[in-house]
Length: 462
Image (tube, rainbow, N blue to C red; front, side, top):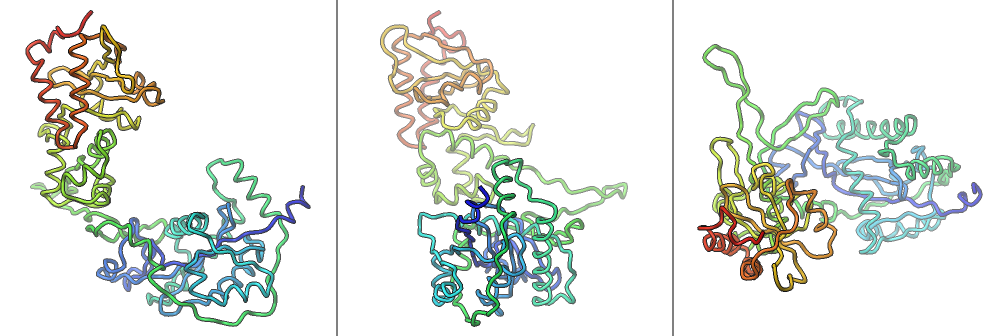
């Protein structure tokens, strides 16, 4: 088995990028950014970008990182040879070095130079996400590097040099104390097998130093970032790093007795409720976004708390989703009534709890007392006390539909209803699904049609 392992091709992933989570600040030194920020917005806060270089063992969390300033970029050959010589976890030079097309295009001579020393340069195609995954993991790991080496002074060059030493220490620490893999036995076995390989040192002859061409590809991660938000600097005494966090720094004010208390900031739960309602809405998120005058990306940013919506669009969303402000609790609640679609378990469970007052909706599946039920959908009525009813449509034959009794407290099973009423339920749901704007309106009209005998459920056959 060991002989077979020795003859397997060793593969490394090599990547270069503007660091997504690390910047330099003239006062704070190296700053870790908790949430990514556009370079232009970072510059407004006095933050300068840093280039990250990294090599990762294919399929394993074994990596080696180094950094440079943007103006004094490191030669790619220098980075590779240094890593293969000094990084114990890489086990020397590989058989295959896989890069993305941008790195290959930035240094066209790299292919020939690596071939001369017995290494094949492979370029990942558009469907190959392995190199991108290694880079993403390296970005995330880099922001948690502890400051163990104090820079000689606060200049960009000195701070980046100290950061490189921190990265080297982190690699050695993982080698000596083990890799944290969340009890993944398969991964643990793979790491142990890899670390038992012999070390293949790179050739003693050095490769010619060559410049490489930078470009927008170095910060391609900017394209998916939301608009900037208020941020503040926070010193973490444990890691000795300064962080840039989203939000406003907690202020202190004095009460009448002179005691200092933290200012209270009201919690906004609209993004959270909207997230779950959008997941249950019969229409696609693109249609919801268009209905309130924003792009899909802006809606996704809002419901994931990555960006705010302007006042008019936010108001349009709360109206569309029928959210009402509860002054007693200081939060928004889904008022409904709705036609919803069973897609995601967590969203169903959360919204049911909200509209039923904690589980008092006594949901039941409606079927016609005579005739055939809808062959595609099952209709579950949620009829909480003192509120208008909501109907949940669940696709027949899907796993999520079978889980409904567990997701909705006090589930009452199947209830036969008058055929005319069942047909009205099916027709109402069909109309409510035509566009996001008509959902609540159709259910309000449905409720009015039965409001006189809704309380005693005279339309339901016992």
